[in-house]
Length: 454
Image (cartoon, rainbow, N blue to C red):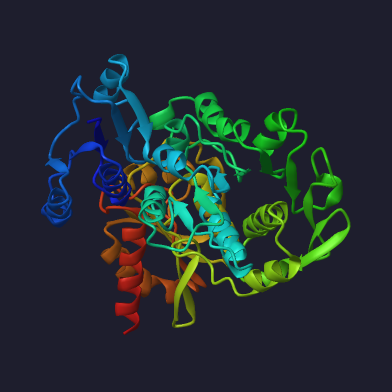
């Protein structure tokens, strides 16, 4: 019997382990976390004949035939390096899903920022068109959950798969070959994992090289400069009009006079999307371009966009209290996303920022703070470092409050006094110092806001 080991007991690892077990593999699973919260999952998997070891750093057994890595597990941990040196096939969870679902056309959406909104909007359009096209990857289902459902025959057959794909998942997917690949933006991120900007870029570009059709944000300066010679036949987008399109304008999508256009043909009014910020106009273009490449009719596109509710944790308005909007932008986990969030809201702003800091260029973010923010409330591990950066830039309207609870309380006191229009959680940081995920952080913000209002 072939032996497989899965690293990581999240929903991705859980689904991958169950899929392999049903296909006749001898499966074990490990997770370096030994939290009691994982115990019910462990018991369920063990009842299905899967060995689960918690609190264990993976070290390969030479008898293994396959190692499957959950998305959050670094690709270069010692155990994986050893496995590869031993000649054990090592793949990501998304690669395993692809191998089981390669007969279904995939849309894969990658980029530093904008992935989640573009993925959710694209999936909404496909679904309004009557297609069974679930979102998966970093939102919605784990990819292997869809593969498991398809294998068991427990769900309606898939027409398309709409996958949000991170650099981690591309790095660990050797044969992923989507029908359509979308590249939303490119700015420095995850350099603590990929080390250099060039390495990070090459990983993203790999997905497009392996795809049949490409949709690329032509307004992103880095992509415009570096990618246009590589993908001349791609579908490029621009919110700045047809004359700003890169390469083939017949394939391109652009905005003119508040209309999303292709080659002179109006498709949908741009303001039908009820999400703030010019960046969301670009996300709209990429979703519409993808839908048209897939043959979806204009009527379904218009209906889906006009009824799209937005994305949780990305400029999500939680409440209006004392005339002030409280907005959850917990998904802004790097400087560029946080700068976009600030640019999209009305000023003056009370900004809640901090968490587990990432490498990157904070110049534009700090410029936007100085332009729009009445006060910054700093939380998490990055609070002290952020305070020093703000002082170095001659910005002194900040306070270290440490936790989200204290930030909400302080914001409720100072926002009316400072005439703030918005209290914005847009951390510019990962969440793992105090939370399990950016979703966990955003849900806590929501809970605290509603308690304040109540």
